Structures are given as C-alpha cells and as structure tokens.
Length: 416
Image (cartoon, rainbow, N blue to C red; front, side, top):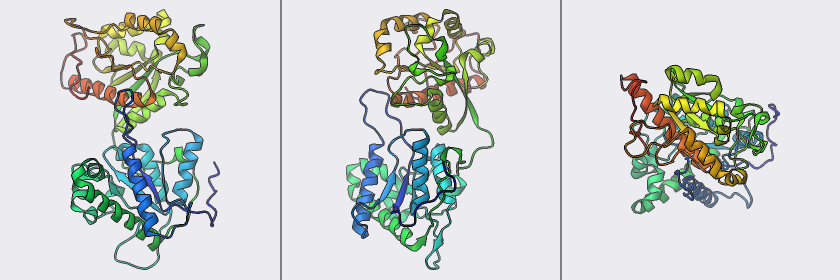
C-alpha cells in the first residue's frame, strides 16, 4: 500500500464513516444476521442526510463495512474511506471497545487534523458517537471519555436505552426516528463547521488500537489439531491446508484466512490475549499438568486418521482438563468431508466419546454436539462460548476447585 498516497481533491467525500463491532450470529443454521439492524440504522441516517443536504445524486453519503472480509483489499478500502470521510461515527457497545479493528478505525481517523471554520465554545473533533446500547455500567476508554459528548440531546429514551432497543421495541418507534434525525443533523453540522483535510492511506493492519490496553491481559491459548499440506492422507485435498498446521482453512471459500486467526481475533475482541500453536507443540504440557491458561482446541476430524497423533487427543480427553474446550469445525459445503462423513464421525466418536447419561467422566465434547459449527458465522459464536467455558473452568480451578486428578463437571455456568 502506498503510505504517502492521499485522496484527489475533487473526489467526492462521504459525510460519515459508521464504525461498529460485528455481532456473531446465533449458533443455528439459518439464523438472521444481527448486523442487519446496524445496516438499517445506516440506511436511515443516509436518507435523513440526503433530506437535510443538497448532496447530488450518486454522492457517497456514508460508508459502512458489511463484508467482514479480511485481506489486503478489505484493509485498503477501510483505510481509503477513513482517510476521506468528513465525520467518524463510532457505534458504542461493550463489544465495540473490545474490537481491535474498531480501535484501529478510531486511531486512523483521529490522526487527521481538524480545523473549525469559526471559533465556538465547543471543541469540534470530527467524531460523533452514537449509543447502540446503554454504556451506563461500562467504563469508556480514555479517548472516548475525553469527548464528553451529551447523548441526552438525542432524547431521554435514547440516552437510557440506546438505538438497538429503540429499533426493536415498537413503543419506542417515534423516539428512534427522533434520535436518528438528530444524529443526522449532528453529523451534517460537524461536517459543515469543520475542515478535516483528507489523510494518508496507511496500512490498516499495522495500525495500533486507539483504545486503552490493560497492563495485563488474561491469556487464552488456541491450539490447532490439523495437517500440513504435505502430510495429508490420499482421501483429502490440500485446498484447505497450508505449510503449517495452523494454516488450516476449513471454511473456504467463505473465509480465505486461517481459522486460528479468526479465533484469535474473537478472543482478542473479548479482552483476552490469545496465542496460537500447533497442538503437537504443546501436547506434552497439556497432558502433564494441564494448560497454564484457558485453552480452545480446534480439531480437524481428518487428522484423526493419523493414529499416533489422535492418540494424544484421546489421552488429553482422559486427563479431563476442564480448562480445555474443543471445537470441531465442519463446513457443510465441503463435499469431500460430506462424502466421508460417516468415517469421520466414527473416528471422532472413537477419540472423543460423548459423555451421556450416568457416565461419570465428562468428555471434552459437549453432549449436545454444539461444538461442530457448520459455517464461519456459526464458528464465531461457538468460539465465544468455548472461550467462556474454558475461562470459567480455569477461574474455578484457580479458586481451589476440582484438581486435575478428579472428575470435573464442565457443564458451563455461562452460556449454552
């Protein structure tokens, strides 16, 4: 990316960039995309701004990232929009301030200079925050706290409940329209009262987050049990694999990045410090004394064809560490896996038998089979639940709960 490149002076500039944290789908097939509510808000804001201004037909009123795609083109597009937009609108939620991507967006915009067209008592920053949900019980990071934005000016119900509740609850319909109109007016006022020159298009992935990072972060280990592309069995194509076992990409073509990277981003967004390793690199440590931090094991069932390595997973299951949560990603669109589904299921049942009924020793697997997400969206939701299961068990262990030699009841106290 050309770090010195800016935007053409005559290029149309969107009024606002809507920055928000993507919400994962509920872990069920066919579940509605929860981010559609943010998309509706975006459309309503664009419509209101078109009514308020004389923006010509075809003028980019705003920008909202709907893709969730990773990679260079995705990052370049975000950087270009952040370098040219006139106002930055962060959509506040607890998930927002845990998102590294949102923190980078805030950082990139705030690097640009802001000049007020006329002196006023209020210092214009070019940032107009909006409440997606109430943040009353959450401490804002320093950069957000310094804005001292008066949310009450958009309406009492908005300030108390946030836009999501106003959209979902029919009784708040008029309050929602009032809040959107006032937010749109605020965006236009800031855009017209300030001069914010276009900025440089910088490398998005290398930017720091604007949000405060804790001095110490809770760790989460992400362990990958899969193949390298050169060690695959004859029945399996190399399409989903790479040079390292951590390069496994089970949800291609929907996601073309290693699954471990997606998992790390999710853990990081929850406030944890993730590490990614091949299962084989840390198997002996896991077997000896258990993980020193909560661990999520990503299991490729195809790797159970390797008897020696699958025996390590079987032994880990028998050690019964509650601080290890297992996810077995299963791409419904992977025809090769579907053709061998019975064989792969039998292999999995042999290595990780499901605990049922009166069986005293729980397995690493959940009885409900919830750890087999069939799509990348389902995986993101399941990853959050797996992190919470492992962390809950780890906290119980730290408080003097069941030791490693006794049976551990891993029925989660949080989530499904």
